[in-house]
Length: 173
Ligand code: HEC
Ligand code: HEC
Image (cartoon, rainbow, N blue to C red; front, top):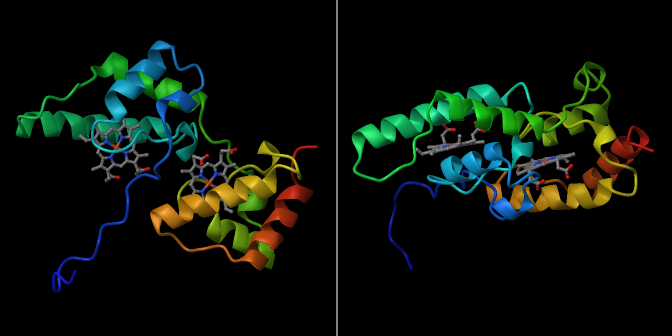
């Protein structure tokens, strides 16, 4: 169907497919508050989307959004108080993405640069030690799915191979 010219379709805000059932410690008070608060405007974000250092600021920004939204609209929203917002930030920080150390962030080799470019499109540069050589191919394959859904820069087959080699050499044994 042709609707004529209009605004370009919006890129999805959150990769779909992450659900509360996938959370660690999902019965903890922090997780419960996170679920109650953070799926009101978009899909529930994965705690792995940010590092422990990044989460507190993101939570503050989002809680301010809920406060504004509730103030300006008749929508019934759950608004966490400061104590509860802190609990959400603590929960997310405890289950956050572990980021690569500075050596990798400053690696100027071609593959190092490829890793930095492709793997920081949605989150911080991940620590290769998070996975073993046998796990990395599947993780990168899952990231390709995330890239497709979020319409980010794709990873070709040869780039995937290069990244698997780079991450596996530095991975957990
Ligand atoms: C009132 C609606 C609303 C609620 C509730 C909300 N968000 Fe958001 N969120 C947004 C909007 C709008 C965006 C896109 C603009 C932006 O990034 O600020 C967004 C984007 C995001 C992003 C992607 C951008 C980034 O900075 O990584 C993350 C992650 C996120 N939200 C996490 C959360 C968390 C955690 C909570 C619960 C504390 C939450 N959101 C609650 C509206 C909301
Ligand atoms: C399109 C956005 C996007 C890009 C680009 C991306 N990721 Fe992710 N990544 C995610 C999302 C969303 C999650 C949390 C949900 C999940 O695990 O699929 C995540 C989580 C992770 C995790 C933690 C979960 C786990 O299985 O250990 C690692 C490690 C990771 N990404 C590595 C990478 C690597 C390596 C690259 C580059 C090849 C990359 N990511 C590129 C979106 C992305």
